[in-house]
Image (tube, rainbow, N blue to C red):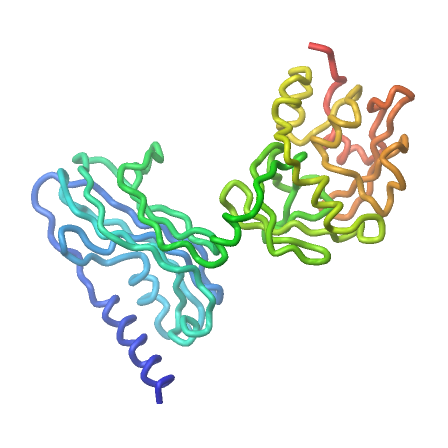
Length: 339
């Protein structure tokens, strides 16, 4: 009985939200656009203007639900922007995750929504955008100028979740090196070539430690750090100590030659680089294929599981990269200098 009433109530809220019509704006106005991402079975993340000066307006959230009617659990994202009177105005902003079907709202474990009122002064003819952050660690929404991205309102936050409080209490450290990650934010000890990466020296907090992984808050973003391949060579605690340093490596990196610093920013290496510099740029080699860091050959892998190696000379500097021409072009730059 309670379940049936809850679904009915949610459906009523869905339909009520779809019934809002835009007020007529007379005089000078500005454009305010919503931000919406996602779609399909996974729902969407919405940062929307719900009303101005107490007047409800259609949103990307309500319009997406309306457009998804009859599509079951598949949410179709619809973009929305509207005219709002220029000058001083009170806006109600909302950040939330939403789904096409009421039952999904009941079963999903969604971040807490953030909402509230902000006082802003809008410039006539200018375009603005509602934007924010919505994840397990942070729920925040604000208004920004669309062209510059400059925030023009107060930032509205939901109370910190238990997850956010746990992450905030973790010890602050810094990433040792460029840490590559997959589409789901998983940072593996594979450190795949041609993947996006978290730059060396980025603030990181590890918490919820397990035998082969830990949750990570990296520069305010939730991710995972995992030990996928080197479990026979290191414990996860030992691996985490290599990756998350108590001392910020950025001052040490700043002392490298300028072209080495430039290569590290690109996640590449140069002939003549030291092992330390290679580690900062590519991360540690594959532990299950590289017996020791003292070896003259370090093995790495690409996202496509193509193994390549970095070879060092007697002075422990990069001599060559043993790889296909395509991989060499992705990982190797010109010879390192001493500038």
